[in-house]
Length: 144
Image 1 (spheres, rainbow, N blue to C red):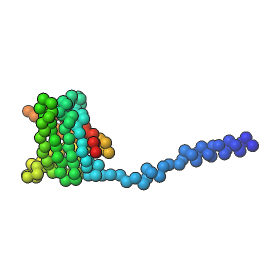
Image 2: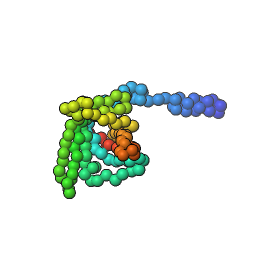
Image 3: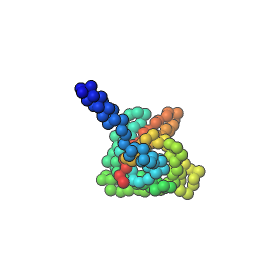
Image 4: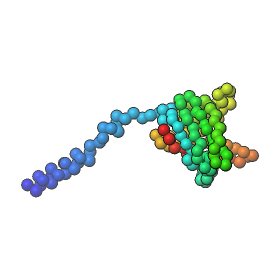
C-alpha cells in the first residue's frame, strides 16, 4: 500500500509541474511598430557606458509616437516652464528607428532599438565628433 501511495504522489507531482499556462501561447507578440505607439518620457542616458545625470528639464522631455510621426517636447528655463515642440516622421525597420524631417525626408538619422516593451524604450546612437566616437544609450519610460 505504501508503494502505491508513493507512485500516486509521484505521478501527481509530475502532472502538476508539467502543466503550462495557456495564456502564454495565446497572447500575440506585438511588433516594434505597435509597441512604440504612445507617450514616452526620458529617464536615463549613458555616454560610452557611463551614466549621465539628466537635468530636471531633461526628465520632462517627452516623445509621442502615433504610428507615422513623433512629436518631441523639450523643456527649458529656470523652472523648466518653457517648452519647444517639434515633429518628425519616423519608420521602423526591424530594430532600426529612423527619423526624418517632415519637410525634407532626405534629412534623416537613425537609432538602434536595443529594448522595446510595454514600459521601456532604449535607443542607441553613435556619433563621431572631431575623430572621436561617442555611443549614447537613451532610456525612456512609457507614460501612457
